[in-house]
Amino acid sequence: MHFSRLGSTLLLASVVAGQLKKDCGAGIGNCPDDKPCCSQYGQCGIGAYCLGGCDPMFSHSLQSCMPAPQCQSTTYQFTDSKSSPILSNTKYLGDPSTADWVSDGQPLYANGVVYLTMAPNTVGTVLASTRYVWYGKISATMRTSRGQGVVSAFIMMSDVKDEIDYEWVGVDLKTSQTNYYWNGIPNYTHSGNITLDSGDTYSEWHTYTIDWTPDSITWLVDGQVGRVQKRGDTYNATTGNFEFPQTPSRVQLSLWPGGLASNGKGTIDWAGGPISWTGGDIATYGYYFAQVKEVTVECYNAPNAQGSGKKSYVYKDLKQVNTSVVLSDDQTYLASLVATGEDPDKQLPNAQSSATTIIKTNAAGQVSTVVSTVAPTGSSVGTVPGLDGAGFGSNDLNKGNDPDGSGSGGDASGTGSSGPESTGWSQSDAKTGDSTRLALVSGNIIALMLVGAAMLAL
Ligand SMILES: *[C@@H]1O[C@H](CO)[C@@H](O)[C@H](O)[C@H]1NC(C)=O
Ligand SMILES: *[C@@H]1O[C@H](CO)[C@@H](O)[C@H](O)[C@H]1NC(C)=O
Ligand SMILES: *[C@@H]1O[C@H](CO)[C@@H](O)[C@H](O)[C@H]1NC(C)=O
Ligand SMILES: *[C@@H]1O[C@H](CO)[C@@H](O)[C@H](O)[C@H]1NC(C)=O
Image 1 (cartoon, protein in one colour):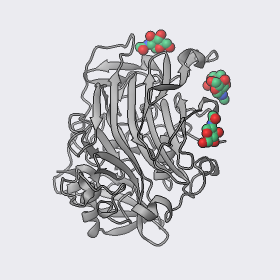
Image 2 (cartoon, protein in one colour; image 1 turned 30 degrees about the vertical axis):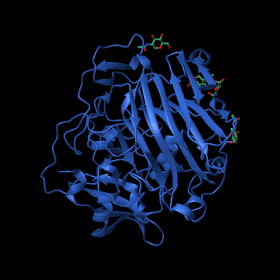
Image 3 (cartoon, protein in one colour; image 1 turned 60 degrees about the horizontal axis):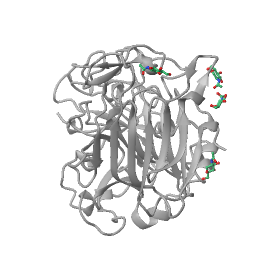
Image 4 (cartoon, helix red, strand yellow; image 1 turned 135 degrees about the horizontal axis):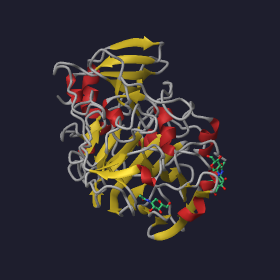
């Protein structure tokens, strides 16, 4: 039983930022004015902290988080880096015309699909859609990962932590675990399983659908209804709220180590046990991986929505319900990674500045996890939340073995030449890593690394 488990993305956050204390969130409080944005992971910062996942509830003010780009009905394919552009979260500034997805970790194009990879001692990969969905039918055609402690996920997640989930633990390749959260409140009675009649989630492509309307959530696997949750059955008479996901949400696809030793026992048990960094697909391919072939989004309209803007969703109050959201024409992008929703046009002090990345080192002193990228001002204010270290401390994934062996297409063939934007940040950053300078800043687990100005794409 994993009744103390938080939503998958919240959990991922605690993995990513395991050594950092939370500085905003329920029971902690709001962010201060010099780092006003509360990230999805519960840390305060500027820049990318104010984009997707920025929590209006615990940020400095209602203006701190940037407006969220509105839904657009589309089919995303991942045949190559240009079909549905993925931009690293160190580069994305909030304009959805520049990228369909924002990555954290190491996505990899190969065989006409995108691989979400998890190399040894990393916390895996997340893709988040740059646009939000405020009700819609979202389908992902994918293959999960496998192995003890390895968790694959396809979820919808709102900035106030409404969440609709599919999750797969790598020891049970027959079961799709479904769940939903309202305002991030965990309740184990909200989970439910859908079992495949035949085959498994790793070896075959299946299409997993979340059909989210104002009145119900329907989970479908290969077009067959597996579960329905009605809004009407979520009413809380004490508060008068429907405890039902009802706020604009991003699509998130991820692979993460539920079986990491530093996770809670409940999580490790749920994930099937401790993860192995030497066995299974790590031994064969050098990393665990899930594969995504296609994501389709069909937008529905929110009934009775306030406002008539066509560009963004904006929170106008902190009730965290559907009436808190307004359709607006407000801009969704920042001028730089030192800007915030309160000052979206703020520019970097000078073009020579370099960003600083806070990284974690393991007991042997090797770089493992990137915790945050901070402002190029000498201050310690974070600009990119929850960055993980996939790609650090491991072999260059693009030179690794090609899962499935067909070796066709994409950057995974080892050419690695289509530009750093196309596969997240690993290629360029692996290079800057050569000239890394390490400096201890707080104890022996957090280090500072200076990264070239290229990181901010000046
Ligand atoms: C969990 O959800 C169920 C069904 O929605 C509800 O009856 C129960 O009171 C909830 N538990 C808590 C602690 O909120
Ligand atoms: C779903 O299946 C998993 C095993 O894969 C099991 O641990 C869990 O208890 C099941 N959940 C429900 C709600 O039946
Ligand atoms: C209703 O909301 C109250 C206050 O948040 C909570 O304590 C209670 O568990 C909720 N009841 C249900 C049935 O979810
Ligand atoms: C919010 O949800 C309620 C049902 O809980 C519905 O009656 C109302 O129309 C919705 N309002 C908006 C703005 O979506």
